[in-house]
Length: 72
Length: 205
Image (cartoon, rainbow over all chains, first blue to last red; front, side):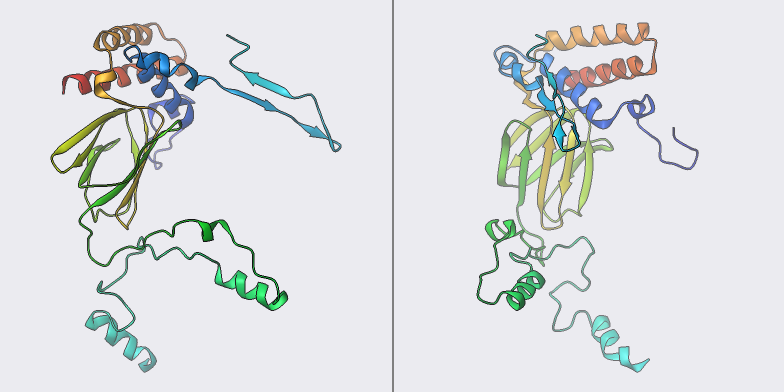
């Protein structure tokens, strides 16, 4: 990915990871090393819940709901 | 050629009436943020002189402080996480951030910098007290007006970290690195090792 003249890329970018993925992995590792009760306070932070709705011809199609709560 | 004479002369003397005490302004210097866009207001008044121009968000915000002409005595820091604002507009003496290029100390008057942070310790020095946080990753923006914004995804006080979990995690990820096949898995394992090593160093340092 890095040519001879470009700046050195970090190892995670060379492996195909984006900064956000890297940052989120770091954060979840730090959260996993916490003592109780602090660890249980962070339980909800990693959960994501959003719906993506594509529109065609001025009408919304069926929304694609991404949620961690249903996967629990 | 002589048209530029007076300008060059005042520059050489070191300022001139219009400029502040600094001989030359840096490109990173910040002026006071305007609370309204003068061009927009003027155009509005021409078209609709009887109606007041609408207020934009800038009019409701506190204006950005300008770069002071002399170095201020305190640094103002903002330290934010996605779920809470850890430090907001606090005046401190120094802050040490764990930049990827090494621990960087930021004092008042520091040159404007953007630093990517690596997992490590953030120290906030205020008088004789030092507050330590372990930061997972993020960025530090030092502005020319001695305001520093630090953003991180996760930041915990060092005494919230469990040493036994750190040792176990380090062993786990070292094992994962040995058994990893794809580049992505190797990168993940390497990140795990890096973060756990940093946690270890933070606990013992």
